[in-house]
Image 1 (cartoon, rainbow, N blue to C red):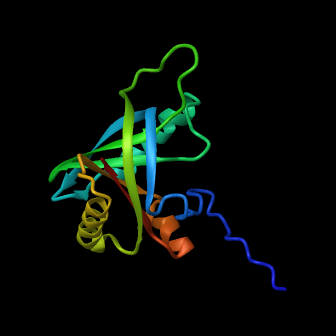
Image 2 (image 1 turned 180 degrees about the vertical axis):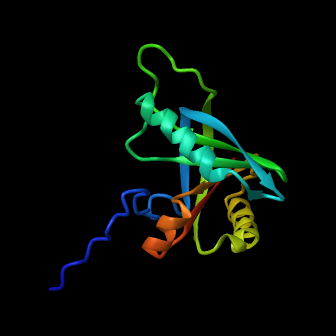
Length: 164
């Protein structure tokens, strides 16, 4: 019997397991997120990396990090998007920041490949939502790892979450 080789972690983003996310219904009740804004040009992020670094520095400094990192991006416009990074409830003095609690029912699908396929993935997600006799109120994107880690792991997963 051949032993399964373990993926060597990068030390940055953890390897992503798509099984718990693909074709699932996810219930969120008052999940707490740190909110940040990313500047974009026709949906192409300009300062995503620096916003992530600044946000993660804030989260780590204030001991707000969750065990399993989860974030959602609301591609709200051509020139910007809102980034929501899940955090633990602050203990003691609440650090200054913009926080949002999100509740709802979400359908999720996992896609793998280059971001140039995003339009195809969104159309497929729309079909998935309709197949469940639901209507999407809002759509979020969960980019599971940074580009360097996606390259290192050889897989670039994106989870699309439709609030229904």
